[in-house]
Image (cartoon, rainbow, N blue to C red; front, side, top):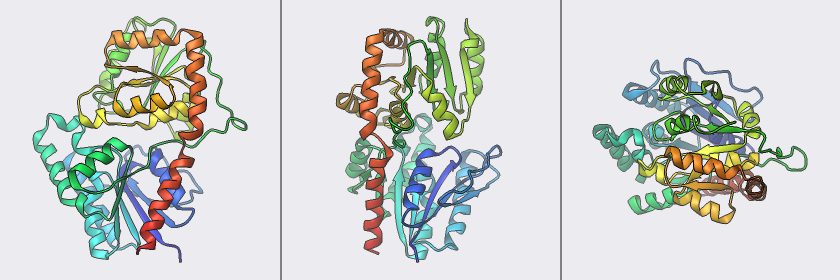
Length: 370
């Protein structure tokens, strides 16, 4: 009988590509169930997945009520399901997973997608931040194994709790240059693409303001978030509102197609929290695999990768002048082609096919010790 692994998250499984990749990889060897949330506007999941899926409803979309009820629902779901390993994704599923694993006597994993207690949404909410900090302090030391998305966060957790965190970077599958082909982007294709949540601290307001001073370019935003309504209102007041396009949520396949046709990828973050400063966004690697250079932050993880293979123009802030200057660099055809070629070289190593080997070893080792 195959070992049973239950992976848990609070995300909508239709759009969480990291969890999809993890579940698919582990399903090669184990029976895997991926648990996520069901939103009011959730789209049906793909058919013929290699793993089982469960979507929990709480009646709430956000806030304390959502997190509390989700953990209650998740705990009772886990309590009555066979499992050899239960893995919590981020702090917002860890309490339910911790207690369920203890009651059942099974191993508990922890997948930290970010430095949760340093999210910018918590910076000016000391009471809420304190609650999450206590959850982190209570539960993280009790996990049996853990992994995260980059070395900076792994070092932070090791320093704070003395616990080793493996690193599994959030990379997409490699695009085969020979069969599928990386799109030969041209400087005539003038799409600036931002993919991800439309939340505070992403430099999105500055990007929209900069569009008044950048000619012959469209700004495409793929995603939704807390700023969705405000950004749409801001875009409507832009001198060229028709050049700012909101796509909303896109399926992974739709997003892949849109990214392949872009000119420049955008990965901006304001230095408003340690979580942002030590981040390593999946969009960084998505742009690389699509063969498009990008504008990203001069933060530690991006700086190290750009030294390995220069695929981006690094900026120190998200101001309008900084954005305009970075975009102007790509207008040099030779410079653009150089960075684009570097993307193709980097794509060979920066891919899920390599990261998945680390993931498989982690679970193999845990089940061997069972």
